[in-house]
Length: 124
Image (cartoon, rainbow, N blue to C red):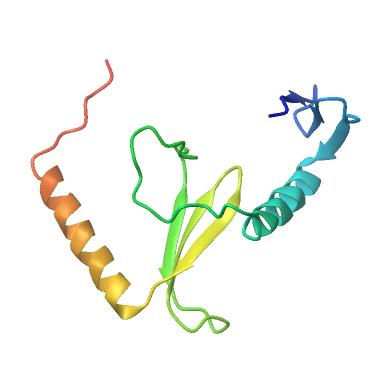
C-alpha cells in the first residue's frame, strides 16, 4: 500500500498530497471537497465492495466531535433521508423506507432509556 504524505499549507486554506513516486498535488479546500466527492462515488464501483455489516470496535470509523444531522423528505428522493454532515466529508445520506424508520425510532428510544439518569461529567 502506498504511503500518503499530506501537508497543510501555512495559511490553512490548502494542502499538498503525495503518494509514493507520484507528483505532489496541491489542492484548495473547494478542490479537495470535489476530489473527496468523486473518490467516494468511484469507491462504490470498486471491488471488493464495502461490507454492509454492523460496526465492530476494531473497524475504522470517521467520527467528528461536531457533526450535524438532518432527517426529512426531499422532492428528488422517493423516501425520507437521514443525512449526516461530517466536517471533512460533507453530507452523506441514506434513504429510509418505513421499516427502517421504525427500526431507527425504536433504537433511538432504546438509547434514550440507557441515558436515563446519566449526568455528563463537569469540567473543573
